[in-house]
Length: 316
Image (cartoon, rainbow, N blue to C red; front, side):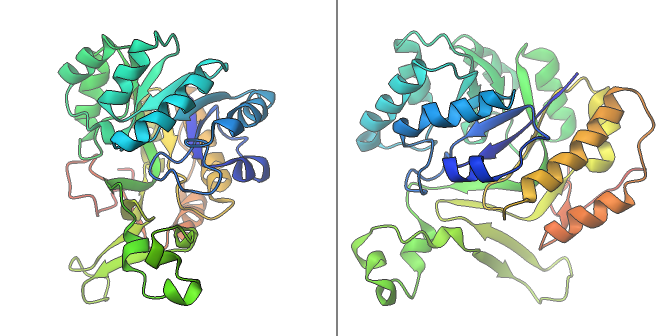
């Protein structure tokens, strides 16, 4: 059949959220090790998180920090050592140096390449397979046809995002922390470089006339990572995805309000289940109302139909 997954940053979100629509959870925020109680930087929390996921009958994938510097490799290695002693179903990497570390430790767990591994071709996927990579997340700029080509020619699983804001840029420094104008008023934390967790609030980058025309664009900033303003939406193309032989689907949950993953997940669970059963697609009108209400800047298809990421094309 198929697998539907999403991401959960920390233990609090995991305990309080409804992730019942998903087969698997990616634990951790790979963009920022300072995110509160981040699974990706707190080895002491891994066992508790893993127990919760397993008790719910789901797979657990651990996300490793995407852009480590030399000073980060020590604690990243500590996290890996802890994870390798636990029954995770896979580890996700973005960095080739971290992938090498896993190989040197004779990692027997499946390894997934994350979005910032910047994979564009099936040939790259073939090389990575030799280093233990079993699943890849193709670069978001690829069309659906190109994603399918990788899946058919690389002999690895391909993770296909179907909903949520698209990761575009990642940095080892925090844009919000560096450009906040009120850090000193909140205790001087911005001045001394420590984190005041302003990323838990919404921050938007916008430009244009504000009239909804093509000149308008927006991006969402989460501190060390910038996302698309619009939400990728492939609900009306579930039958197409199933017909392409793709089977691993993903909902982006980073930076979203509580309840987002539950609402989106239930909609896609139903749509994909119908698609893989060969049943006619249900009228998407009601579901699209819900998804549109959750998408402050609107919906798009990303780059799947060879556009610039802003348009939304419904089912023909």
